[in-house]
Image 1 (cartoon, rainbow, N blue to C red):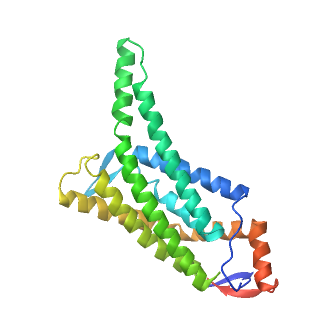
Image 2: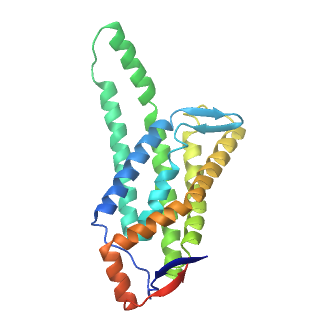
Image 3: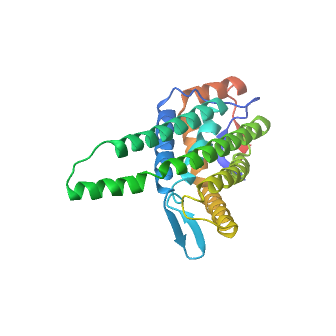
Length: 246
């Protein structure tokens, strides 16, 4: 569709420098989202006929943030964000192991409390392994498709980039995650796995599609307020305004 904004059409794909406050905020949000999603993912959830896990409502945000990072800052910045999400999630599970192993108090309440902590956080490492494998492969696929499409269409076709990369990236992520995580959340049959994977993929993809207007708007605001993005856009276009199809 045609936007009401007047933007400029560059000759090659334009990206901002990642050394900005916007990138820092996105990176921090992505790391926290991945960590909390991995903790929530250790709980199996049954919503009527749908089998899922406790992280289902939050994890799509990681892909929205990945889309914003890739579109505005490029593939190199996206790889850095993915790597930091991986490292922080791994650090979280190592900290959980240390917390569980530390000697506690010897009263009845403390022993019960420590057992509950071990029960809640102990299996998380398996979910982290599933989440990290799926996250890394899915996000890299997502970012690769977005950058290739931007190389071709430049500032045009943002909605198409978001939809295409989301579908493929979420498919890769969901299949890997569900295969590794299934035993942890109590899934033991192929039918349960298929239900888990199908509805997980459908949910995450539909949520991201529903948020595309918001994602598109956020990307537009960040592009407008990133000096390095605007400077490169001006270099590419000679600061001449042209209406852009998006």
